[in-house]
Length: 136
Image (cartoon, rainbow, N blue to C red; front, side):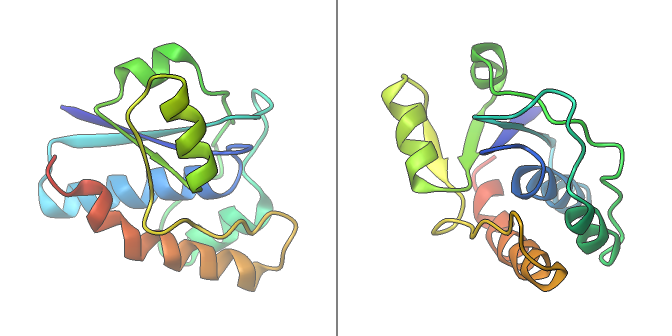
């Protein structure tokens, strides 16, 4: 099974949404792949943001039990593909010796925004998921 790791800053918004959307996409397409998520500055155990949970529930995905986790060398090394929410995060990981790419052209950060901001973010991620799965 191929492993995809989605990386953002705090692992409470974008990357957990991306992992859930990727896992649904993989199931629907019959891919032998699964995603996880982590954050470069994550506070271990922090829950997904309420707006992220709500935005994902609107599309039938439950991330209410998500617990944030920091990026570790073990997580990065175990991943067949690392997709970051920003080019700056991808560049940081590449400088650290990992083959990281940006999801799409980068995903806007909804942190601190409205539910509508989280919906837009969710939809940006959903549009970029096929590219993240390409070639797996």
